[in-house]
Length: 345
Image (cartoon, rainbow, N blue to C red):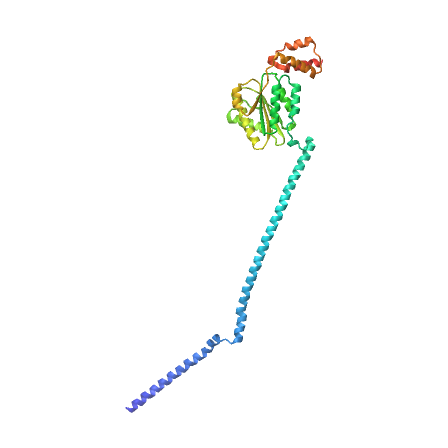
């Protein structure tokens, strides 16, 4: 019995010794590994400072560098904006000065050009010389004082308006075409005068919009923005279609003038006496200028007038021959031609 107990005791002792050895091994492992942990946790001050220098300080330097770079970027941004603003202000100043100087340059250039070409620096901006034109009308047209007065008033009005329209109405030989020729020959802006014959310059066979477009193209191709444009359309018949074409053309010219594109004097000469009511309705913008029919009294004035003009004294026989002319159909025009022939003998 005692032997068994001793045996058990020895076995327990052996087992306990084994356990102690194992425990000692475990403690040795933990102790060996512990310093590494402690070393990390309990870093000596010098090493800590070195790590701070190596790790923390560079990070602070990076942050300050980034802050400095941001400040530099902001400075560069402000400098760029200030530079752009300065360039803009300087550019605006120079552009305004250039535009002013260029306007002055072109005004000087135009003045010199007109002075050389037309003999007048203000050629494009002069008024219509109505007094000179009226003086010539009175010298050359007999017995149409009322018509001449209306022409004078219309030309004076044209200097204040953008456009003026006149319709010359009357029989053959009463001075309509002569009046328009005098106006054309005394027009200051020679390059701005256009004298059309309706049947020759305009296609009478066209109708509607096609006719209107063609009429407008023909007329506007001659317009100028320098000075006053004089447009004369002679030998216009009194057909309703023709009057309507003239009315449409007038409205287009009126619109162009009101848009400050051109200054226009528009004269239409009818070869027959149209219906005055129809004419006034269709050409409501026109000044209607009636030339009086040619009478025996006007014939005598016509003979006297052209005797003075051609500096010739007609014999009683020559005067009687002139009085035999059908003056109601031919007016003063034929008388003037005959007196001119006599003066050249």
